[in-house]
Length: 373
Image (tube, rainbow, N blue to C red):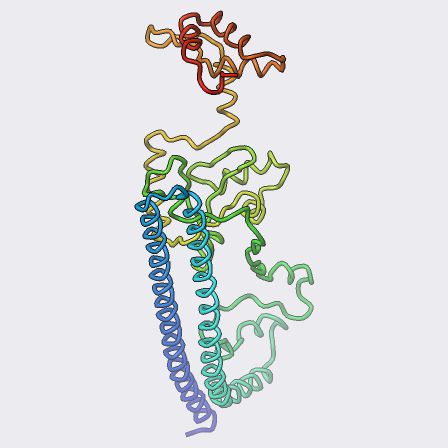
Protein backbone atom coordinates (compact mmCIF):
# COMPACT_ATOMS: atom_id res chain seq x y z
CA UNK A 1 0.00 0.00 0.00
CA UNK A 2 1.45 3.36 -1.04
CA UNK A 3 2.06 6.14 1.47
CA UNK A 4 -0.64 8.53 0.11
CA UNK A 5 -3.20 5.72 0.31
CA UNK A 6 -2.31 4.95 3.93
CA UNK A 7 -2.55 8.62 4.87
CA UNK A 8 -5.88 8.86 3.09
CA UNK A 9 -7.19 5.85 5.06
CA UNK A 10 -5.96 7.39 8.32
CA UNK A 11 -7.77 10.61 7.47
CA UNK A 12 -11.01 8.73 6.75
CA UNK A 13 -10.72 6.80 10.01
CA UNK A 14 -10.12 10.05 11.89
CA UNK A 15 -13.18 11.55 10.21
CA UNK A 16 -15.35 8.61 11.30
CA UNK A 17 -13.96 8.86 14.84
CA UNK A 18 -14.76 12.56 14.91
CA UNK A 19 -18.33 11.85 13.85
CA UNK A 20 -18.69 9.35 16.70
CA UNK A 21 -17.32 11.92 19.18
CA UNK A 22 -19.72 14.53 17.86
CA UNK A 23 -22.71 12.18 18.14
CA UNK A 24 -21.79 11.36 21.76
CA UNK A 25 -21.38 15.06 22.62
CA UNK A 26 -24.69 15.96 21.01
CA UNK A 27 -26.56 13.19 22.84
CA UNK A 28 -25.30 14.44 26.21
CA UNK A 29 -26.12 18.04 25.28
CA UNK A 30 -29.71 17.10 24.38
CA UNK A 31 -30.00 15.17 27.65
CA UNK A 32 -28.87 18.22 29.68
CA UNK A 33 -31.32 20.47 27.84
CA UNK A 34 -34.16 18.03 28.49
CA UNK A 35 -33.30 17.85 32.21
CA UNK A 36 -33.17 21.65 32.40
CA UNK A 37 -36.60 22.06 30.78
CA UNK A 38 -38.12 19.42 33.07
CA UNK A 39 -36.75 21.09 36.21
CA UNK A 40 -38.00 24.53 35.11
CA UNK A 41 -41.41 23.03 34.34
CA UNK A 42 -41.62 21.55 37.85
CA UNK A 43 -40.65 24.90 39.43
CA UNK A 44 -43.31 26.75 37.43
CA UNK A 45 -45.93 24.16 38.40
CA UNK A 46 -45.02 24.55 42.08
CA UNK A 47 -45.26 28.34 41.78
CA UNK A 48 -48.71 28.13 40.19
CA UNK A 49 -49.90 25.89 43.03
CA UNK A 50 -48.54 28.35 45.60
CA UNK A 51 -50.33 31.23 43.85
CA UNK A 52 -53.57 29.22 43.94
CA UNK A 53 -53.15 28.70 47.70
CA UNK A 54 -52.61 32.45 48.24
CA UNK A 55 -55.73 33.32 46.24
CA UNK A 56 -57.78 30.71 48.11
CA UNK A 57 -56.61 32.15 51.43
CA UNK A 58 -57.68 35.62 50.28
CA UNK A 59 -61.15 34.37 49.34
CA UNK A 60 -61.55 32.60 52.70
CA UNK A 61 -60.58 35.73 54.61
CA UNK A 62 -63.03 37.87 52.66
CA UNK A 63 -65.82 35.33 53.13
CA UNK A 64 -65.19 35.27 56.87
CA UNK A 65 -65.27 39.09 57.02
CA UNK A 66 -68.60 39.22 55.14
CA UNK A 67 -70.19 36.49 57.26
CA UNK A 68 -69.29 38.32 60.47
CA UNK A 69 -71.19 41.34 59.20
CA UNK A 70 -68.20 43.63 59.56
CA UNK A 71 -68.83 47.25 58.71
CA UNK A 72 -65.28 47.60 57.47
CA UNK A 73 -65.34 44.98 54.70
CA UNK A 74 -63.83 47.43 52.21
CA UNK A 75 -60.86 48.15 54.47
CA UNK A 76 -60.36 44.44 55.17
CA UNK A 77 -60.48 43.73 51.44
CA UNK A 78 -57.86 46.39 50.70
CA UNK A 79 -55.48 45.00 53.34
CA UNK A 80 -55.98 41.39 52.27
CA UNK A 81 -55.65 42.23 48.57
CA UNK A 82 -52.36 44.02 49.21
CA UNK A 83 -51.09 41.04 51.18
CA UNK A 84 -52.14 38.67 48.41
CA UNK A 85 -50.47 40.73 45.66
CA UNK A 86 -47.21 41.00 47.61
CA UNK A 87 -47.14 37.25 48.27
CA UNK A 88 -47.71 36.52 44.59
CA UNK A 89 -44.96 38.99 43.64
CA UNK A 90 -42.59 37.27 46.07
CA UNK A 91 -43.38 33.89 44.49
CA UNK A 92 -42.73 35.27 41.02
CA UNK A 93 -39.39 36.77 42.08
CA UNK A 94 -38.40 33.47 43.70
CA UNK A 95 -39.25 31.64 40.48
CA UNK A 96 -37.03 33.99 38.47
CA UNK A 97 -34.13 33.47 40.88
CA UNK A 98 -34.57 29.69 40.76
CA UNK A 99 -34.71 29.76 36.97
CA UNK A 100 -31.43 31.71 36.85
CA UNK A 101 -29.72 29.31 39.26
CA UNK A 102 -30.88 26.25 37.33
CA UNK A 103 -29.74 27.84 34.06
CA UNK A 104 -26.28 28.57 35.51
CA UNK A 105 -25.99 25.00 36.85
CA UNK A 106 -26.79 23.36 33.52
CA UNK A 107 -24.62 25.83 31.59
CA UNK A 108 -21.68 24.85 33.79
CA UNK A 109 -22.31 21.14 33.17
CA UNK A 110 -22.57 21.71 29.41
CA UNK A 111 -19.34 23.74 29.40
CA UNK A 112 -17.44 20.95 31.19
CA UNK A 113 -18.89 18.38 28.82
CA UNK A 114 -18.05 20.47 25.74
CA UNK A 115 -14.50 21.23 26.90
CA UNK A 116 -13.81 17.52 27.35
CA UNK A 117 -15.01 16.61 23.87
CA UNK A 118 -13.39 19.61 22.18
CA UNK A 119 -9.96 18.31 23.26
CA UNK A 120 -10.79 14.91 21.79
CA UNK A 121 -11.94 16.49 18.53
CA UNK A 122 -8.76 18.56 18.18
CA UNK A 123 -6.64 15.45 18.76
CA UNK A 124 -8.61 13.63 16.06
CA UNK A 125 -8.12 16.51 13.62
CA UNK A 126 -4.32 15.98 13.40
CA UNK A 127 -4.36 13.16 10.77
CA UNK A 128 -6.92 15.07 8.71
CA UNK A 129 -4.87 18.27 8.83
CA UNK A 130 -1.69 16.40 7.84
CA UNK A 131 -3.37 14.75 4.85
CA UNK A 132 -4.91 18.05 3.76
CA UNK A 133 -1.55 19.85 3.97
CA UNK A 134 0.08 17.25 1.74
CA UNK A 135 -2.73 17.56 -0.78
CA UNK A 136 -2.16 21.32 -0.87
CA UNK A 137 1.55 20.81 -1.46
CA UNK A 138 0.96 18.47 -4.40
CA UNK A 139 -1.57 20.81 -5.96
CA UNK A 140 0.73 23.81 -5.52
CA UNK A 141 3.43 22.09 -7.59
CA UNK A 142 1.13 21.93 -10.64
CA UNK A 143 1.08 24.83 -13.16
CA UNK A 144 -1.92 27.11 -12.74
CA UNK A 145 -3.90 28.27 -15.78
CA UNK A 146 -5.44 31.04 -13.70
CA UNK A 147 -4.07 32.58 -10.47
CA UNK A 148 -7.46 32.59 -8.76
CA UNK A 149 -9.96 30.04 -10.05
CA UNK A 150 -8.12 26.78 -9.13
CA UNK A 151 -7.66 27.92 -5.55
CA UNK A 152 -11.41 28.20 -5.19
CA UNK A 153 -11.90 24.78 -6.73
CA UNK A 154 -9.68 22.96 -4.24
CA UNK A 155 -10.93 24.46 -0.96
CA UNK A 156 -10.82 21.40 1.35
CA UNK A 157 -14.21 20.23 2.55
CA UNK A 158 -12.64 18.59 5.59
CA UNK A 159 -11.78 22.04 6.98
CA UNK A 160 -15.46 22.93 7.41
CA UNK A 161 -16.77 23.10 11.01
CA UNK A 162 -18.93 20.11 11.96
CA UNK A 163 -22.58 20.89 11.34
CA UNK A 164 -21.60 24.32 9.95
CA UNK A 165 -23.30 26.22 7.15
CA UNK A 166 -22.75 25.56 3.47
CA UNK A 167 -19.73 26.97 1.62
CA UNK A 168 -19.83 30.71 1.24
CA UNK A 169 -18.09 32.66 -1.52
CA UNK A 170 -14.74 33.69 -0.07
CA UNK A 171 -12.87 36.80 -1.12
CA UNK A 172 -9.16 36.33 -1.69
CA UNK A 173 -6.61 39.07 -0.95
CA UNK A 174 -6.81 41.81 -3.56
CA UNK A 175 -10.46 41.09 -4.44
CA UNK A 176 -13.43 43.26 -3.53
CA UNK A 177 -13.30 46.16 -1.11
CA UNK A 178 -13.67 46.72 2.66
CA UNK A 179 -17.20 48.05 2.08
CA UNK A 180 -18.23 44.77 0.40
CA UNK A 181 -16.84 42.82 3.35
CA UNK A 182 -18.83 44.94 5.80
CA UNK A 183 -22.04 44.41 3.82
CA UNK A 184 -21.51 40.64 3.92
CA UNK A 185 -21.48 40.57 7.71
CA UNK A 186 -24.74 39.30 9.25
CA UNK A 187 -26.68 41.81 11.36
CA UNK A 188 -26.00 41.68 15.08
CA UNK A 189 -29.22 40.81 16.97
CA UNK A 190 -30.17 43.41 19.53
CA UNK A 191 -31.87 42.37 22.76
CA UNK A 192 -35.33 43.68 23.60
CA UNK A 193 -35.11 46.79 25.81
CA UNK A 194 -35.69 46.05 29.47
CA UNK A 195 -38.66 47.82 30.98
CA UNK A 196 -37.58 49.84 34.01
CA UNK A 197 -40.98 50.57 35.59
CA UNK A 198 -44.71 50.47 34.96
CA UNK A 199 -47.62 52.64 36.03
CA UNK A 200 -48.99 50.05 38.43
CA UNK A 201 -49.92 46.45 39.11
CA UNK A 202 -53.25 44.66 39.20
CA UNK A 203 -54.29 41.15 40.22
CA UNK A 204 -55.57 38.72 37.60
CA UNK A 205 -58.85 38.22 39.45
CA UNK A 206 -59.48 41.97 39.39
CA UNK A 207 -59.04 41.95 35.60
CA UNK A 208 -61.03 38.79 34.91
CA UNK A 209 -63.78 39.02 37.60
CA UNK A 210 -65.08 35.54 36.68
CA UNK A 211 -65.60 36.71 33.10
CA UNK A 212 -68.11 39.40 34.12
CA UNK A 213 -65.85 42.48 34.30
CA UNK A 214 -67.52 45.75 33.30
CA UNK A 215 -64.32 46.94 31.62
CA UNK A 216 -62.58 44.19 29.66
CA UNK A 217 -58.87 44.12 28.82
CA UNK A 218 -56.76 41.84 26.63
CA UNK A 219 -53.76 40.45 28.57
CA UNK A 220 -50.49 40.29 26.60
CA UNK A 221 -46.94 39.19 27.42
CA UNK A 222 -43.82 41.33 26.98
CA UNK A 223 -41.33 40.65 25.53
CA UNK A 224 -43.60 38.81 23.05
CA UNK A 225 -42.99 35.07 22.84
CA UNK A 226 -40.74 35.10 25.92
CA UNK A 227 -41.76 32.47 28.47
CA UNK A 228 -39.98 34.51 31.15
CA UNK A 229 -41.78 37.77 30.29
CA UNK A 230 -44.43 39.60 32.32
CA UNK A 231 -48.15 39.91 31.62
CA UNK A 232 -49.71 43.34 31.05
CA UNK A 233 -52.94 45.19 30.34
CA UNK A 234 -52.93 48.69 28.85
CA UNK A 235 -55.03 51.70 29.78
CA UNK A 236 -54.59 55.47 30.08
CA UNK A 237 -55.98 56.73 33.38
CA UNK A 238 -55.25 60.34 32.43
CA UNK A 239 -57.56 60.31 29.41
CA UNK A 240 -59.89 57.50 30.54
CA UNK A 241 -58.91 55.36 27.57
CA UNK A 242 -58.96 51.55 27.19
CA UNK A 243 -57.86 49.63 24.09
CA UNK A 244 -59.20 46.93 21.81
CA UNK A 245 -58.17 43.48 20.65
CA UNK A 246 -54.66 44.65 19.77
CA UNK A 247 -53.95 46.71 22.90
CA UNK A 248 -50.21 47.14 22.32
CA UNK A 249 -50.76 48.77 18.93
CA UNK A 250 -53.61 50.91 20.25
CA UNK A 251 -51.56 52.04 23.23
CA UNK A 252 -48.60 52.90 20.98
CA UNK A 253 -50.86 55.04 18.78
CA UNK A 254 -52.38 56.73 21.84
CA UNK A 255 -48.93 57.79 23.10
CA UNK A 256 -48.95 60.52 20.44
CA UNK A 257 -51.50 62.37 22.62
CA UNK A 258 -48.82 62.35 25.33
CA UNK A 259 -46.30 63.76 22.80
CA UNK A 260 -44.25 60.56 23.15
CA UNK A 261 -43.02 58.09 20.51
CA UNK A 262 -44.62 54.66 20.39
CA UNK A 263 -41.54 52.63 21.34
CA UNK A 264 -42.38 49.34 23.14
CA UNK A 265 -40.45 50.28 26.28
CA UNK A 266 -42.34 53.59 26.53
CA UNK A 267 -45.69 51.89 25.89
CA UNK A 268 -45.04 49.52 28.79
CA UNK A 269 -43.73 52.27 31.07
CA UNK A 270 -46.48 54.84 30.40
CA UNK A 271 -49.60 52.73 29.83
CA UNK A 272 -48.73 49.21 31.04
CA UNK A 273 -50.19 47.70 34.22
CA UNK A 274 -48.48 44.43 35.20
CA UNK A 275 -50.93 41.61 35.93
CA UNK A 276 -49.97 39.67 39.06
CA UNK A 277 -50.72 35.97 39.43
CA UNK A 278 -51.15 35.47 35.67
CA UNK A 279 -50.03 32.61 33.44
CA UNK A 280 -50.51 31.68 29.79
CA UNK A 281 -53.53 29.54 30.62
CA UNK A 282 -55.19 32.32 32.63
CA UNK A 283 -54.38 34.94 29.98
CA UNK A 284 -55.93 32.75 27.25
CA UNK A 285 -58.99 32.21 29.45
CA UNK A 286 -59.45 35.97 29.91
CA UNK A 287 -58.74 36.80 26.26
CA UNK A 288 -61.33 34.29 25.02
CA UNK A 289 -63.99 36.10 27.06
CA UNK A 290 -62.81 39.50 25.79
CA UNK A 291 -62.79 38.40 22.14
CA UNK A 292 -66.35 37.07 22.46
CA UNK A 293 -67.40 40.37 24.01
CA UNK A 294 -65.93 42.28 21.05
CA UNK A 295 -67.74 39.96 18.65
CA UNK A 296 -70.99 40.82 20.45
CA UNK A 297 -70.40 44.57 20.07
CA UNK A 298 -68.40 45.50 23.18
CA UNK A 299 -66.66 48.88 22.89
CA UNK A 300 -63.62 49.82 25.02
CA UNK A 301 -63.93 52.77 27.38
CA UNK A 302 -63.17 56.14 25.76
CA UNK A 303 -64.20 59.02 28.04
CA UNK A 304 -63.21 61.65 25.47
CA UNK A 305 -65.64 60.20 22.96
CA UNK A 306 -68.35 59.85 25.61
CA UNK A 307 -68.02 63.51 26.61
CA UNK A 308 -68.23 64.53 22.96
CA UNK A 309 -71.44 62.54 22.52
CA UNK A 310 -72.92 63.94 25.73
CA UNK A 311 -72.19 67.52 24.64
CA UNK A 312 -73.84 66.87 21.30
CA UNK A 313 -76.95 65.29 22.79
CA UNK A 314 -77.31 67.38 25.98
CA UNK A 315 -80.39 69.60 25.95
CA UNK A 316 -81.58 68.33 22.56
CA UNK A 317 -84.92 66.73 21.80
CA UNK A 318 -84.44 63.25 20.39
CA UNK A 319 -87.04 61.16 18.66
CA UNK A 320 -86.77 57.38 18.69
CA UNK A 321 -89.51 55.15 17.27
CA UNK A 322 -92.10 57.91 17.68
CA UNK A 323 -91.39 58.53 21.40
CA UNK A 324 -89.86 61.82 22.51
CA UNK A 325 -86.95 61.51 24.97
CA UNK A 326 -86.66 64.64 27.12
CA UNK A 327 -83.39 65.75 28.69
CA UNK A 328 -82.88 64.51 32.23
CA UNK A 329 -82.61 66.91 35.17
CA UNK A 330 -78.97 65.89 35.67
CA UNK A 331 -78.06 66.83 32.08
CA UNK A 332 -79.82 70.20 32.40
CA UNK A 333 -78.03 71.06 35.65
CA UNK A 334 -74.71 70.16 34.03
CA UNK A 335 -75.60 72.27 30.98
CA UNK A 336 -76.27 75.36 33.13
CA UNK A 337 -73.15 74.89 35.25
CA UNK A 338 -71.07 74.39 32.10
CA UNK A 339 -71.88 77.98 31.04
CA UNK A 340 -69.74 79.23 33.97
CA UNK A 341 -72.65 81.47 35.08
CA UNK A 342 -73.10 81.80 38.83
CA UNK A 343 -76.55 80.41 39.57
CA UNK A 344 -78.61 78.83 42.34
CA UNK A 345 -80.49 75.58 42.57
CA UNK A 346 -83.82 77.44 42.29
CA UNK A 347 -82.76 79.01 38.99
CA UNK A 348 -81.67 75.62 37.71
CA UNK A 349 -85.07 74.13 38.56
CA UNK A 350 -86.89 77.03 36.85
CA UNK A 351 -84.82 76.49 33.74
CA UNK A 352 -85.61 72.79 33.93
CA UNK A 353 -89.35 73.52 34.09
CA UNK A 354 -89.02 75.74 31.05
CA UNK A 355 -87.15 73.04 29.11
CA UNK A 356 -89.43 70.12 30.02
CA UNK A 357 -92.48 71.14 32.13
CA UNK A 358 -93.73 67.67 32.96
CA UNK A 359 -90.43 66.29 34.18
CA UNK A 360 -89.63 69.64 35.74
CA UNK A 361 -92.76 69.47 37.94
CA UNK A 362 -91.85 65.96 39.00
CA UNK A 363 -88.34 67.11 39.75
CA UNK A 364 -89.61 69.92 41.98
CA UNK A 365 -91.86 67.47 43.81
CA UNK A 366 -89.10 64.91 44.31
CA UNK A 367 -85.92 66.88 44.74
CA UNK A 368 -82.87 64.62 44.81
CA UNK A 369 -80.11 65.00 47.35
CA UNK A 370 -77.79 67.03 45.13
CA UNK A 371 -80.61 69.57 44.40
CA UNK A 372 -81.39 70.34 48.06
CA UNK A 373 -80.06 73.29 50.00
